[in-house]
Image (cartoon, rainbow over all chains, first blue to last red; front, top):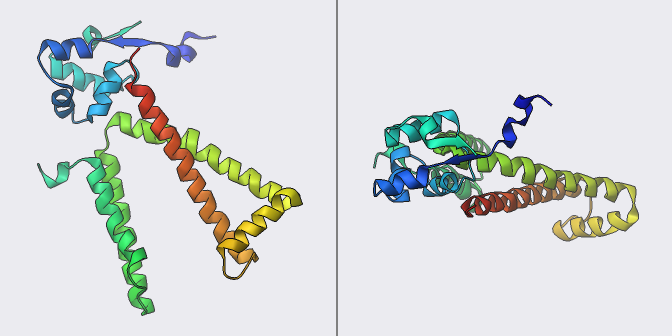
Length: 74
Length: 144
């Protein structure tokens, strides 16, 4: 089976919670910066929702980092 | 907060209010006036529902899409199976006809069967959607 067909099975991990707490932001603060709901921030932090590239770029911009510094393959 | 940047649910509420009023207030007797009011209500509903969707964030949109696909569509399929079984076998057909008769003052006629069937299918579809939508969000809140 081609690797590409298994892309949806790839488990991603992220450092969103770690980076947010480092900055002293609440989940609501980050949600406001990203213009998303707090539930969405919770889902992303828990690794239960992988954001699309546009949202991942917004998250990276919010932290002033590159996407690959925040999101990695598990 | 700008009126253009309210939460998505606020626009959903704004979209639904005239539709609720149209259903709940006494019926407008004049046919033309009723048609104009109904058309305006639909335009309002579609416009604000569209803007509510635009304002919705990405995971929330995903939740809706997932819930319609895995909740709404299977629920509708179940209703289709019930409809087929009701036509094919009296075991299912008799209770369905009794239900239709209980919901219509004209009894179980083809017309009442159609309207009760459409309404029941919509209700079951929304129930299936709501169940999966709730499960989707609950699953995203758990760690690990």
